[in-house]
Length: 344
Image 1 (spheres, rainbow, N blue to C red):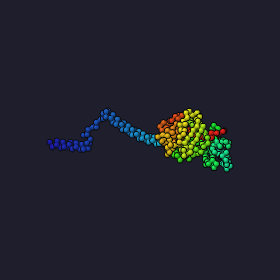
Image 2 (cartoon, rainbow, N blue to C red):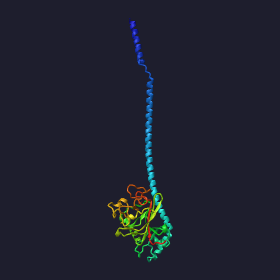
Image 3 (cartoon, rainbow, N blue to C red):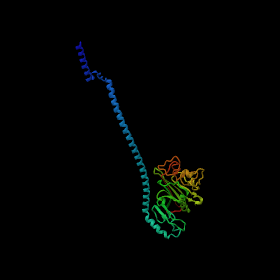
């Protein structure tokens, strides 16, 4: 009996030692994953990969968006620079035209200045461009009219048209580049403003003096399609400042269609600071210029320079209603005068 007990104890000890040495024998064997579980695991890995790709694409799109924004800013800056360069080129072109004209008539001007010292009578006086033309100055360009005590005229720089319809025209207004604002006050319109080789108004006081003898007015116009028209008036007078530079016109002739200046005949001059029109509205403020406003316009040759013509909103462009109507702003305008009895 004792032997059986010892034998049982021995086997128990052996079992305990074996258990301590290899506890894994009593653990459950790992379960095998089913095909469904394997698919889920693989799907999760694909989702993680797609999320990573989406994150990369989002970063790439963000970088592209930032680059596009920088490129757009660069394009805008380039466009602004091109516009600025275009304006600078226009200025340089105007200057070049002036220099070319100045070179062409430099000899004539020197001769004119030499002749100034022997001007004693009204017959010898250099009164305007027609006087120069009759003395065989035949090149269009800038001339300096000398002061003359006999006529009481000051020295004046003018642009002479020595070619159109026999020449001898003194230009009193020009619009061709839009670089000069014509929305000026009374003093500026009285004295004159702008560039004599570009856009300018000669000055009401000078125009009054030049029109004291019987004078003809010619208005030349060009639209944005290159068509040119003109209007002439057999009699043109501008009264003095005491009479607010009232306009008087004679008979009309030309090829510009309906006469759009006669509506302004016998009206006085108005500017933004001196409202002399025949209307309750302040026409100079509405039409943005200085002019012989009636109530208000059939023409507005001193209006705003609009490129390419259309200006439907304010009707304040350079207009001649008898040709293109009130919503078309002309490309070029010149107003010029010469004596009515001028012979060429």
